[in-house]
Length: 622
Image (cartoon, rainbow, N blue to C red; front, top):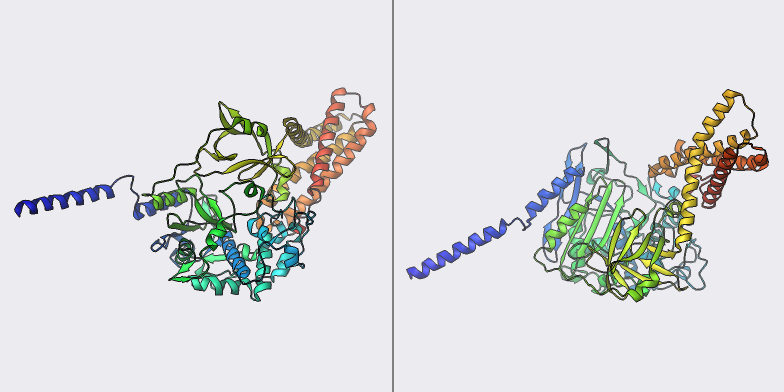
């Protein structure tokens, strides 16, 4: 007995010491160490406060918050402090549309024009590629994103959804065939808010509250654009000049696209709602297959050509593909707030966070995923041999063709893109600056980036046979000569147009001081005005878009841009006219041909940017 007792004691002591050793292992993350590390990241990244929740299917690991919700009032973040969650709101739009479809109100594959002919949208491909309701949910309509005048609502009451939709009518024109390319469009979800109200007979607030917030147990969550008790809400901040500046709670004309306000306690329940396939307290709020349906994309060329992962489904996307395990969910960004909602049903874990300074939170997300997935064996990333024969026709140069904001397209068209190239039996994308990203084959002409665990891109053809590369964006193959001709013309025009504002100024001053006469004076003066207008327009544009909250208003910055752009166009036309008239009489060949290059550059740039709407742009009407 003594021997048995001694062996038992030794065994217990061994197990205890072994447990302590495992607990103290530097590779073992605990909730305490994770929270401590997050606070250090917050301090380093200038994040005042953080909504944070982590959960499993049946356990809430953490549902509080860290830091300060309101610096001025010295109010800390707690489990019920409401944060603006931005586009995570869209997940409730998807749930609402699935429920209305189940009630027989419509089918998601119905044509939008048939379901709601009163909606003001334009689609020149309607005969062969009609806009369908599901395209709105998957951002494959081809619609533009919000225009400046239709972003912020600084009144005191939310507009009716039909009126809100009419504010976005300039965005509601298809830019390519619907159902082919994914391009994020908030106005599409404004339409969904209207459809929810039309077919339910309730406001989207009431419908979501009754059918989802209440059954899930999200008792603090709302979609208020104008909060009644502001103390319940975290304050958003902007960090600049080594200090935090509080931001106003500006409403947006987004409706169900981005008005969600939620807290750690409620987001924990929302995570568990997905992890349990829609079951809450043994009661099915939704059918069990709806979550999978939300996760599954069914439109866009990439899906139709066989890409199986890293797609945007019904307001639900696969994300963090470079982590040990990919997650599903949605993120959100709105003035002063950056939010994430993610879960992995296979592992039965999920998390949500929101920081109130709109700061980069990738390090925090990585740490949380590492904590939640420790102990699970990650799957082996798919890998296949590179099929050189299959890839060969796709090698070449690609440019993006699915801009989210059409106004940015002419500014970024010639600065983006890559070369698809095989180097030593490995496929790479080679960017303009020479940086390379490896693409690892996974089969069926799908690829993953070197650090991804699932396929993230596909090489395929559109219906006309044009080669396309679809990853995070939609890229079309272009000829090398065509790309560089456009790039050289564009960059050359920018350089010559900007530089002439200096050259013309000094040339005219020197000419005036010397009291010389020249037939080039009128040409130089005109081009100088145009070049100066171009430079001022560039500066004014930076100023306007630097503060989106005022970009859609009549103010000094937007008027400055309007006048500058008109000055640019007038100067370009006058300069080109007088140069054509006096070209043969200009004696200096150097000056003559420099003026010719400058005139071509400035006039060509004026035509190009004018075609895209930048000349005489009234931001308050865009």
